[in-house]
Amino acid sequence: MKIICIGMNYAEHVRELPGVWGGAVQQRERPMPQEPVFFIKPDTALLRNNEPFYIPDFSEDVQYECELVVRIDRLCKGIEERFAHRCYAEVGLGIDFTARDLQRRCKAEGLPWEIAKGFDHSAAVAPVFVPKAELPDMQQLHFSMKLNGEQRQTGFTGDMIFSVDRIIAYVSQFVTLRIGDLIFTGTPAGVGQVHIGDRITAELEGRILLDFQVK
Image 1 (cartoon, helix red, strand yellow):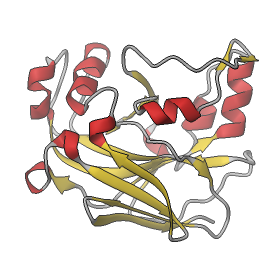
Image 2 (cartoon, one colour):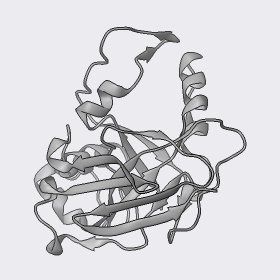
Image 3 (cartoon, helix red, strand yellow):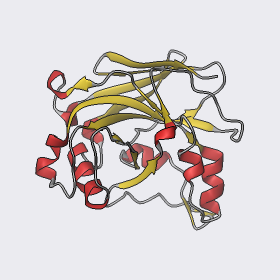
């Protein structure tokens, strides 16, 4: 099982990201991606069943990113976009935790930044996934995240730069998707830092799927 994460899939989130290329902070606006951008977290990054998230001692700026998560339920390799909907039957929510200080440092030095994204328990996944049949069209879904009861992120899949099916088709050109693989489809604007004592809740179409503590 692998965790595939899509970066920069909501325009407003792309605009809120700092523009860092080649170690220099650029003042101009970051360009929108022309193709899906993805990276992979190991299975040890999973945080299941609304268990507490423990802030690692190697970072002083861990940030949340709430995302729609697709669970693959059949083998998919080089799938065409028009058939991609056959690759999954359920969706849920997840939090892609990012050690932002480590990520900034690695980017500035031109280094890979897996340590900022792939550390243990950096991918919280809701214990319940919702069947597609119980939801509106996949590109008409609303989800949101609260931190200590205060709304921080609101997402609408219609705002995605790349649709769920486009993501699956693109990723499957390079990486075979297997049963149980998870795809984090990108986060909307509003990412921010977590602290000890925080409580994260998130809902999809009115259903609370995530509810856990930060320790």
